Amino acid sequence: ALADAYEAQHDDYNKIMVKAIADRLAEAFAEYLHERVRKVYWGYAPNESLSNDELIRENYQGIRPAPGYPACPEHTEKGPIWQRALI
Image (tube, rainbow, N blue to C red; front, side, top):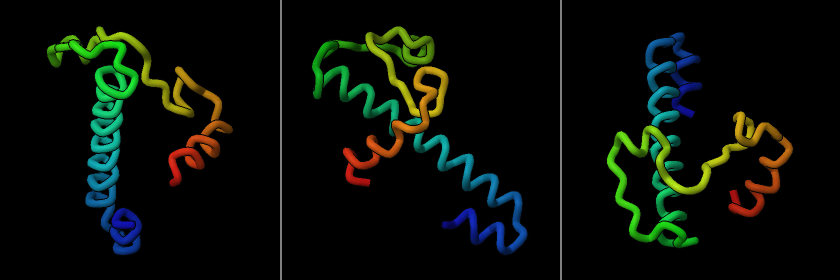
């Protein structure tokens, strides 16, 4: 991975920046998928139209659990999730 290459070069700054950017992209994609679930796939909020402030305050219906985080602290569920996602 790119972060490993920077680590091998003892380039801590770029290693940290790559990891930070990857984290933000993962978060943005998770938020996008959550919106698609609410509006399209499960369709329980098809007409939802929230501002950025409302999204930040989590004024939407439903939850977005993530294994390993407080809403879903059980790490053992990661394996079955990855298997279902074919990752």
